[in-house]
Image (cartoon, rainbow, N blue to C red; front, side):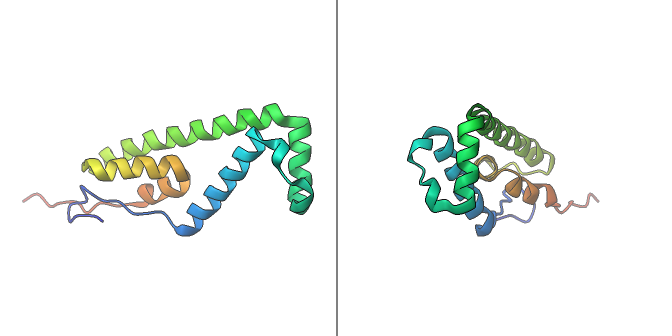
Length: 123
C-alpha cells in the first residue's frame, strides 16, 4: 500500500505478532481486572504462576499493565515522528501506523524503523 514516493507507505504487521500480542494482552487484562474468574488449575504452570502473581503482586501487575499501554502510546507518537522524518505524509497511512503501533507496539514500529524511502534525485 505504498506509493512511488512513499508518501502513503504502510505495511501491515505479521499475523504471528498480531496473534501473540492480542492473546497476551487479553490474558493480562483478564488477570488484572477479573482474577477471580481465571481457571488457574486448568492452565498448568501458567495458572500456578499467574495465581502466585495475583496473590502476591497484584499492585505490580496493575501498574505494569498501565505502563505497558503508556509505552505503546509513546511508541505510537514516535511512529508519527518517524512518518514525518521518512516522508510519509498521507493522513490515512499515518493513522494506520499510529493505530497499528498502539496495538502491536515494537513489532509494528520495527517495520517503520526498517523502512528506507527512495530518495528522489535532484537534477
